[in-house]
Length: 369
Length: 243
Image (cartoon, rainbow over all chains, first blue to last red; front, side):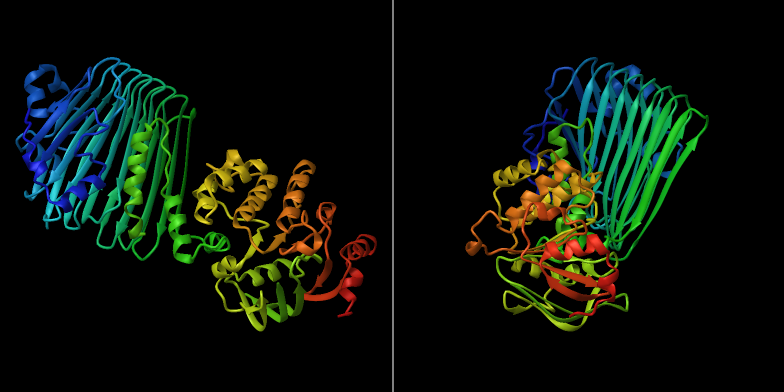
């Protein structure tokens, strides 16, 4: 494990701000552990919390032979050119193992920061054993100095019996950075997987479609995405839940705003087992040009599954703006107030500290509304 | 407080109000009556300054100033307030957050007002989302309590409200127009649209106006006008050209 924090301490003020916008606490206050990776270098990997182990994936694979069964298991190495590229690189990224029954009150933070390199790759493995509760906040950012670059990230989540993983990812990439996360989760009996994604800053391209397979009875998956697409951004964002076990449920919620950017918001729930339920909610606002293409898909494979979706794309209703203006708010403030409300997603099961972090990331972008 | 002179208003290219004249003094509360589609809501929304209501002739004076071309939010800041009949639902915007955003009222005072309107449990809920008829009216009155307008317009405050709520709302509206103060000390004014007149059980109106086909046909004692409507319907009013 590296403990060389010089690289973090030598960050420019602009880069510190960018990292803080991703929810990173460089002081590690209110965190039970931190993993910092700058380009391909692990700067810090430390967790002081009993029952939770965090270490670079390269080291974890050497330390635990059994971990190889979890490596390239949920994500196919040959899925596409990006996974193949990651597979061909020196192993980087983090592995987190929350032992049986452990629970972190303060989240673990992981930071993937692009400072110089043109391409950053990571391969993360996150395991919550039976009854464990693991909260994770991941900040992904590029230095203001990075003019062009790409981030390819593979993450495999394993949620054990009656376990919970919440992962909150906040992106602050640059406007010339391409981002291709490849994530998948498997959720065991009574387990819960919460995936929250916030991107409020300019980025060239993001393409991702995380998949959660609910293989345990009464397991739950919730995906929440809050996205702002400024001009020049091309975002192809998806989320899929496969209800493979009796009584499993999923909820996929996305709030998308474009200010000139192009967004495809995909959601897909497959009801493949008895007594399963799933709901998709996709709402988009087009504020200042750009486009939003909502693709909600619900796929029932037997009769005893209840799947539904609602999708709406358009502008802010004039009567809503005037309602607030009648209370004395000028048009600009009324519009911003409605947008902030639109983006306000309360996430069930998420600790208050993480909810506040998400709120802060959205609040920080208010000037961009 | 308010003077409307020769007001002509078009909505969607069609004239809805024709030569409306109305004067409401400081401390006075007037009632506006008329059949469905006569233009009552249009008049209130035109006075408030909503975008779809084009004033083609005439003017609106508020506290002595011509506000005919003043934007909606500035009229609100000058002291106009409106209780909506069917307010929109705003997804994600909490009632408490709006109340804080629209005023300098201390949060404790907001909570006190909310409790008085039985709305404390609604402060963290999205505005008007799944509110019942009575809850919508209580929310509207609460917003006006926080806004503290000098001139309040109420669009059918009793519609869709059960008997228990109507007392709560009626008494709160009476306080908004300072009916609890001595008559000579009242400074706040109101204009209330009512079909049933139930609101008059909680406050006395200083005058009533009958609006038919976009024109004010008569002005007089509110209870007397209401009695005529109850006994004879709107037929005579529609045919009447008294004013």
